[in-house]
Length: 161
Image: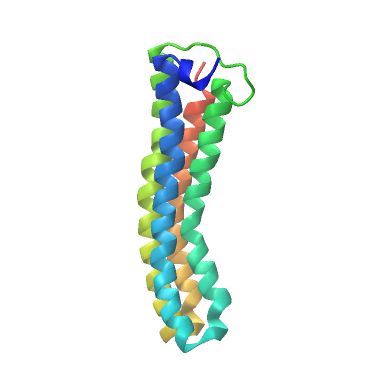
């Protein structure tokens, strides 16, 4: 069955997978961009801090990876990736869609929030370099909520019968 022959249920399930990837990825792009903007200012003054700035910039990118994992897991469970896809009901498609929403929404929002925290952490690195790890801890607090969103999506996907 080709992608253009999907039933409504299948199309809605694939829409959920796409939103998980796109919204979490867009949030990560925004978050890493915010941190990168702050980092470039510091690196103009002190290029020796590149390693620490890079770590702080990369952290908001994890949500995009989480969204990609959920998108692939959803498509795999639907049978799209291995060619075993069968027509699914609207109800089943809505289950897949709903299972993708925690990481789509939670990942997208938390990535931007984490980017803001990372940008603030870069300011800590600029002014008091010996305390930069405190900024890392603040970033990890935001990451916790992205992980909760990831776990919610995984648990929902694995329980779709």
